[in-house]
Image (cartoon, rainbow, N blue to C red; front, side, top):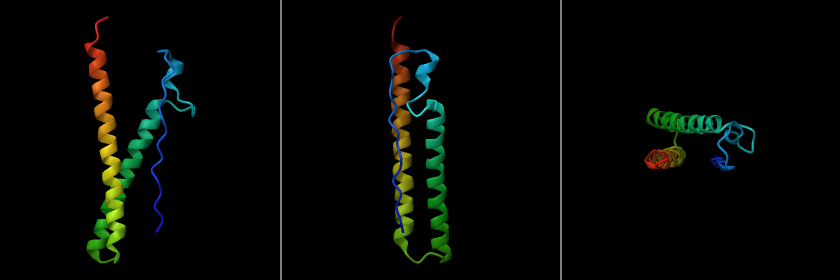
Length: 99
């Protein structure tokens, strides 16, 4: 069994607020990168659920495969929640600023 690492790409800020700052170095807009990351988390969650069902049905004998899939999904979800919390905190901080 091979464990694939979760691929994360750094997000950089060029300093400007024009439309060109919404595109990362890879040429993709931030919203597209974020959407792909959410899809990957969803895929990991469904893989963990499928592995649990297969274990209950007796199709998987090695419980470590199920535990690894479950932990990968759990860590990915925790990371997503922490990113969401940081984005909400940043938004609230910006909204508190006086112009």
